[in-house]
Image 1: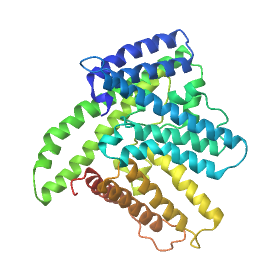
Image 2: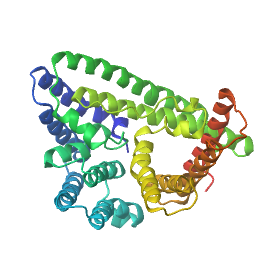
Image 3: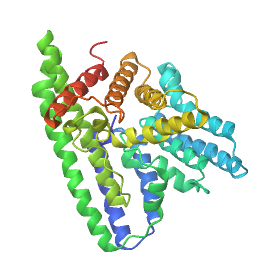
Image 4: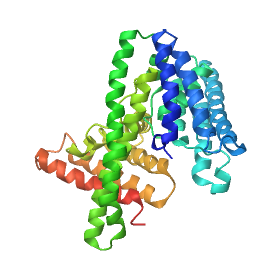
Length: 384
């Protein structure tokens, strides 16, 4: 459940953000503001209910912070090993250990997964993995506990992203900001929060009530087509709205996260779409899965074909993307569907291809939009 869908959460957030603005006016250090606000909001988010505190919400809070501390211990141990010299097995071991809670949550029965699961574990795991990968590349030489916890659990983005990068986050965590910066951040935050209200609380509910819900109850080919487009457009406004909320609240706190959507339905091809849709996830997979695999394959000369590493790297990246959403069949098929589209586009766009049918931008947009909507139909699970 996304906390931005709860008005109780907004009530808690209001008090915290007022305190944050006051702290920034009095030039309190950014690291203090970011860390303290994250701890306070997450404690309220996972512990408070309509009936006050109970044992289960208290365990929820403990689960979240224990997860972050365990991830820090894994990264810190690997940092020490990495400082002693290159150690590829230790890197793979650190990645595997960091993935254990997420894998347990995804593949264990619900009763067993409850031991480690919490809303946002997928996003927090990928942020923790980013730090480990940066350690492997010697881009991180120190890892303070409070900074790591604030990064992994940063409260606006914990449940629905964006998936930030450690080095980018560290810049905001350590950078002093003036009162002029505060005014600029508030201006940007206001625009994004209002966009979130428009998308998530007005446009998405209207689409759901007047289009998606009736289409989901109807039967037949035309009803399925209507459901496909309704689900796709509703998903965009709902998801992009929550991302806008997260980015806007981040600006108030002093963290300038990257945008997560850039008019994705105007993409002229499938590669362009993934540069516009859920940008933080697609770029994470591009840099940490696709890019690393292609580089290793070319260095090791694993394949004779010039373009084979890129094709297989795309399959790995989008397969992982499907699995990241969950182990259900429709998620895996969704990942493989987009892998097929990406590989097909890469074959079409190869620079050595002499004969290539020119596709006008408008036609490309129509074809891409429909192909993407079919993918979202698979993602919805309706076909399964």
